[in-house]
Structures are given as structure tokens and as C-alpha cells.
Length: 125
Image (cartoon, rainbow, N blue to C red; front, side):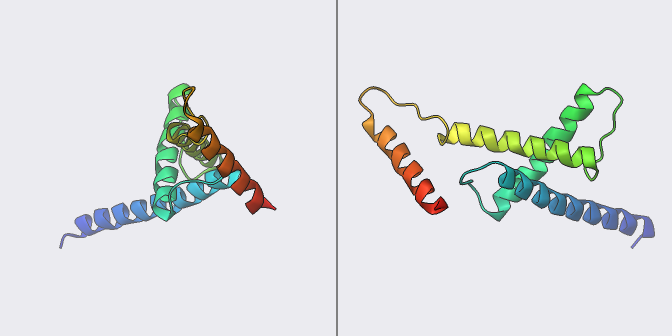
């Protein structure tokens, strides 16, 4: 094998593992900051952290012209956590855990939300 090719493979694997580790930390931080029950397990947390990092760091670089944001830095971590929080908020809104749309005859939606709130209160005590 060519030494230059092996160096490129080693750099790619290192970059991949860095994103996985950093994405996990960012996802866990976002889930820890936002209160309530969160969807997804370990894979959901990992993907939310990685995509949140891309969204957050990309937004900072878009709005600050000429800025280069490295994911593993203080500003990168804050931007990535913010991006993951935005993703988690949109997921909760779209999944119906924040807003429940019900019509006049849909009393089941309101009672299901009340049951969920009671369960959350009982688990917290």
C-alpha cells in the first residue's frame, strides 16, 4: 500500500471518531439542558449532536463573514449545543409533545396530555 494513501485513511478514521465523540458529548449536553423526556436512544443522541454541530457551526460561519469555527473549541461547542437544542425543540414541536392540535370533539388528545403531565410529575417526586 502507498504510504500517502494510508495516511489519508488514518486521517479520515481519526476525523470520523472525533465527530462521533464530539457529537455524543454535544447531544448529551443538549438533552441535559432541555427539560423533559427526550426521544431516541444513544444513536439518536449521537446523530442529533453531529447534525447540531453542523447546523450551529455553519450558522455562526454564515452570519460572521470570514469567521472559521472549529467544532472542538469553546465557540464551536456552544454553537453545536445551540444547533442540537434547536433540533430537539423542532422534534418536540413536530412530534406533538409541546403543542397538541385537537378539534372540538377530540377530548382524547387533551386527556392524553394530562396523563403524560401527571406521569411526569409523579416521576419527579
